[in-house]
Image 1 (cartoon, rainbow, N blue to C red):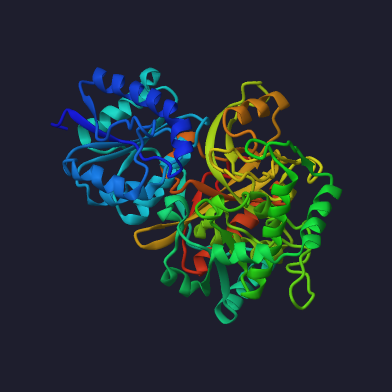
Image 2: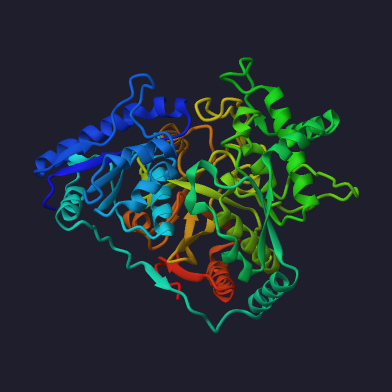
Length: 542
């Protein structure tokens, strides 16, 4: 690049408390980046200043982002540096109009969801058709490989990464008859009976990448029922006390470990949980009344100012072993099976969950599904394994069947106040060992695509688990995952979202059949499918 001055912007949260709490980590990362750029002969120029009144230097609204870009040369090289969770729509309009090289960059840290924020922005840029490059590192000033990649971008305006682990899926001829029959039946039902994703307000936390245009869903036989969070809140008000307390007592009887305190501003209280029980009943009833096959609650904007968090509700919905809720006809809604919930109304995850539940139910495989943030990863400091172990983490929406010890092995902690002012219980647990399929539906080139691969959830020593929780968000459910045939950097280079879906399979022996059946189902529905990595023994999936 001829221009030796590199513009920097930092997209932040909409919530002031989050921006203030996370600013120090962002400032440290920017200082490290500035030193590295200086050593390479370039200068960093921040395109927006620290706000003394707000006590942070993030872009915190879409309008602010638009105004910032008015002062940026459209041809200038620009770095979007993220050490925190960010709202992509704060900067997306400016990046769509930008004509110079774009680099998204994050520090490799679990402390705040900076990696998650960057991946969300990457997925949003991919969907919008904007060219960009991406980099990440634990310590910019000590990482020679990172510096070489950064210099590559500075000279050429782009960075190339290894994605040789990815193979396009077309079709296979050796699926078992049971799988073929299940796929035929699901496609027939979607064609004739259709399916509904119930969406309690779209577009959560700036996640442009997580909304699917209706016309992309129509050929699959899937439609949206646009529901209102205000209607959900209103329905909560008419849930009878005895019904809400009945759900609460059901959870307690299962042995779930609530960690109650007295100060509702910083501790979990019984009253917060009772409100969550009302939400659980209300969500089931509204979803059932509209015939929804899966539902997603936005929560983060709107409901966060009115009632406790939805995450305990979401975890129960995604579980088979959950409190029964009756509809107006006295029938139990989705008795003995999950009522799939897509956290933060991530419609890509919702579509995935809908298809996966139907397929796994037909194949006799586990039907409990959740999304996780691709939060962070590290090698096991205890030395129990040489594998690179990912931290899959979400705010509480994981099903109870995913946790070691089920209900008795799971815990309810108050949600962090900076994100959840009204509190509410998480559904914390450590994921049980076993084989899983991970997947992600995303939009690129104006088409629905799906990446999926095989992984193993492993059990780490308690001390290592606690270290990882303390390095991220200890109140939330955690999954220790080892991806087969996909390195850390390959995953980051390829993944087009902050979220990925996970579902267990009975054993490693059925892994190949399950992932090929899911690939074939998606392929026949018109989704462009890519298989990532290998089987557990390093043999090819295809």
